[in-house]
Length: 349
Image 1 (spheres, rainbow, N blue to C red):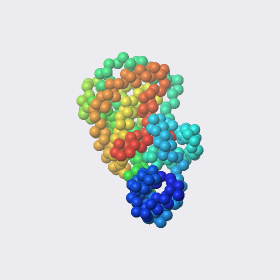
Image 2: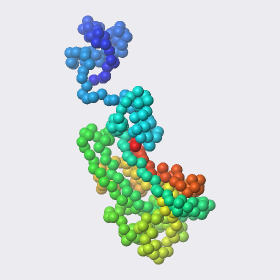
Image 3: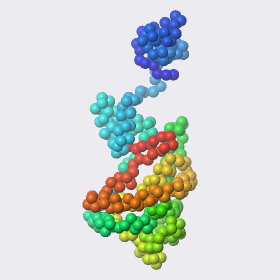
């Protein structure tokens, strides 16, 4: 039943009296200066419950008005780093006093999911200097050099718990949780191979992954002679045995500054993959793996090409920031993802 405008009891009773006298809803509305829909709602309530009194609600009324809900939702959409404390203060200035749990519950009903912001790497002076050195040494490298690099990395992809999705009409239904670890690579020509790492990775396993996937990726991507391999300074990557294996295979390896995820364009590709996977809403680990593989293969080569074409901007940002974290870090450590299918799932702190 539609909600009715709050009217005095005398007005509601007068509506019923006029209805019983044979007047139409339109006529009653004109006589009392009310909308026809309001008159109709009062009459339907009277017919159903034999009263025009306000009926008790099924639960406690929401503490935040619809206007307040729109305000805080808009605030979070514009600035996902907004804290619950900020929203409490905003509402208090608007005349509404609420608690942080109330903020959480309200945003959750709007399809908003909270999470903690990922921390940026701790940069010691040695890291800052190494980043500056790398950026300055490579700033004037021609674009063709970056096009001849195979970028690689590992990432973890979570199975999203969809219990709060609006399509779920039964709140108690859950879709599980978990994650998978992936290794992948790409170049300016497109995505290379992507594989799931099913066991805890160690140096031997990492070398096996490279043995089975790196050279085939280079061939599939039609890399030019003298192509360069990039991986970060994870201990598995820098282990003596791994370095020796790469040397024996005559692979050129890009010397990499530690604590520099903002210099890895593959981080942006991981984000692209995670957005695509989230849109598909996999329900279990098996589906998650299948969708990851399918969506990775669908990533256009133009996306990879653009990431490499703009690489000089990353180096410039490091120099401008004197070796410290750049704007690309905030992009890489994203704190929200978009579900285009039917709902925007945003995050707040």
